Length: 457
Image 1: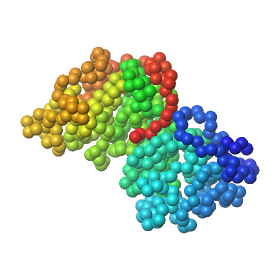
Image 2: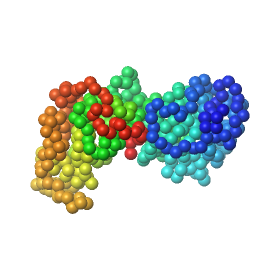
Image 3: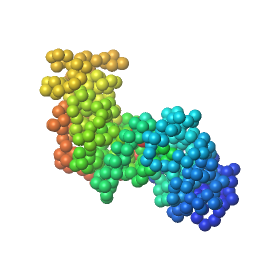
Image 4: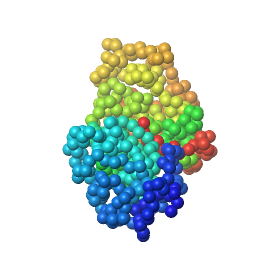
């Protein structure tokens, strides 16, 4: 067996290959959906006792106990530079008693027996396994929630992205809410027609909740960047919009608020094609179970969230309008440096909100004086934004009346006046849809667009 070929749990015979034959650890690189460097899938599981009998030399002392908790063994990470765990106890199996285990971990001299860093993030070891099934290939991204790794599934032969949630109580609780919504999305859309990211699996491993997804290509922010922030044609934007509306229509039907729509959270399914999916339901909630008041990324944050007014699913339509404007111009429509300037950016284009909206605000004194006039804000460049001084057509650099009307329908001050996803699907601009799904004729970026898969930042 070649020195750069990954060894899986045996199917037919035992190999005497030792650790010195391991291939070099690869550095992160661009990801493609049809990678050729992934190992041949092993589809037949072995029992943990069989794996121990023939492959114990590839397992750490900790793993020789841990493996007994996993009934199906597909991959053991024989070439990984494994962490030598600092415990011999029997409390290491994966299970749902996260909170009790976390308290025990914090009393130890190392973080999670050496498997975590001081922040509660799992230490990523390339070529090692997750639940004796997934082989870690690359670190794709990281954020406050934890990390995302690209993995090869030795059970199915698929390449997947796995989100490893940070080993902290508050991140774990929110991730469980996300898993619930993701599972609902699978149940609500069994044929996968509504352009939401597909969860393929979730599990606990070494006190981390892990969520597996289909692998995708780059996000729309990266796509804009690849196009040198020049923006895209209205025709391509319409194709993206139809798919985003299909996602929002499903969410609307089931009263789910995404709460964090932005270009980084919309991924191309394949490089050079216009199929997209909406990702990152980590901030999502049911409209009837709103937990947070500080939601949405600033550039895409709706005025009712900024003002501290009760919000609903209409906040996602506001974000959609901001995204479409950015796809067209290549730059954010409302690039506020702070919440005060964010509202200033909105008022510069959309004018002042009606007084009844201001009166509903629990934060109105931050933004308005007692007469309802906007408080002046100067940004870091010395710019002072004045309400109603930049028409939407000027901000969008467009004279396409239907496109402008569609954006206007998303960017209404009063959420009750915004289009719903269903109303948006019936808008005349959407009804001009075209059938061409190839990006090559629409964007100069497609020729050079790599598939650098990134999860939300």
